Image (cartoon, rainbow, N blue to C red; front, side, top):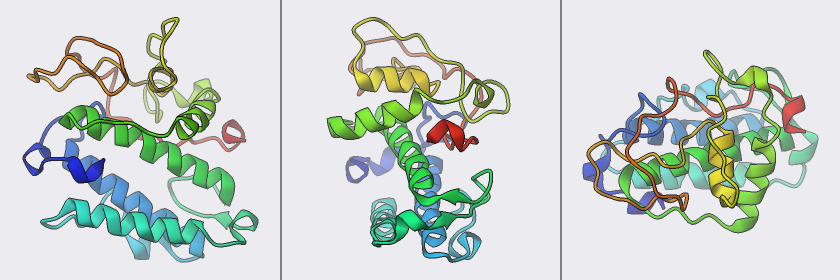
Length: 212
């Protein structure tokens, strides 16, 4: 999906206000490198400062490189026995929980990028279901001003799993890029252009129990 993002759209606004598309890609690449370092037992700050990855002239290549790094780090046989330490997390965390947090973060920001640039967002159904399960257990203390999530958006009867997931993480499933002319959203719901509900929100969960 990232490979389809047009370079001329890197400065476009996203549902994760005030970040533009390039900011989101920097966050995603940084998170990949930092979680990979933590999974290896290395210092995440030595790998990359939070949200400060260098995209250079080819953001797609940067993202793919970071994706390969984190995939390799998460693929070691004894990962489940490890605990990850990053400043983004509330404390040392069992690796399976930390991996779930990272997957949720990348998934939601992937949708942000897709809807901001008009790129199709078609994640596997089992992945959507898994992230939806985690989103359904976000604690109320993680919502609202200062929290990583906005209030739950409207969820309608008959909404797709993706649309329900987006509502649970505080996204407006009907968000469109201001000034855009697309009426079809990657969530599967039609809607008018709207501003995201609240300030910029990262999607890392602050509570270990909520992810178990």
